[in-house]
Image 1 (cartoon, rainbow, N blue to C red):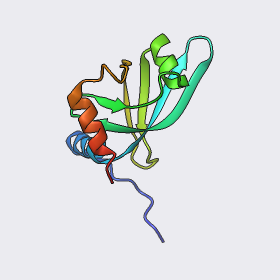
Image 2 (image 1 turned 90 degrees about the horizontal axis):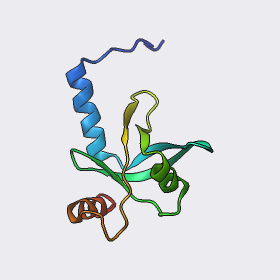
Image 3 (image 1 turned 180 degrees about the vertical axis):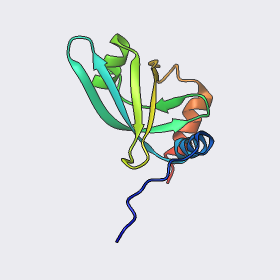
Amino acid sequence: MQNTEFVRRQVAERRRDSLERLATERDVWVSTAHPDHGPHQVPLWFSWDGRAVWMCTSATSVTARNVRKEPRVRLSLPDTFDVVLLQGEAECFTDQNVPGDAADAFSASLEF
């Protein structure tokens, strides 16, 4: 017989675990919505710099077009038993305008 009880973690432990996942995981689900066309959700590679989540997608993607119309986004890390949800506002940068330290960190996070 398996134990099916879940032990609730204290807030400090949950925060530590969530920050560790942000620092080590590669994929995040990005949810956006267009005012006229509704919700859209895709997985993207990401980098966490301790203050912001950096993602890369084509300027013509549905995600980028939605963010330009409605900057509110929700991000989730893919684990149904330990969900991490982030909510905030996204900002689009062209590849020429991405801050250098963010571009370097993102590129480094993609190395296997």
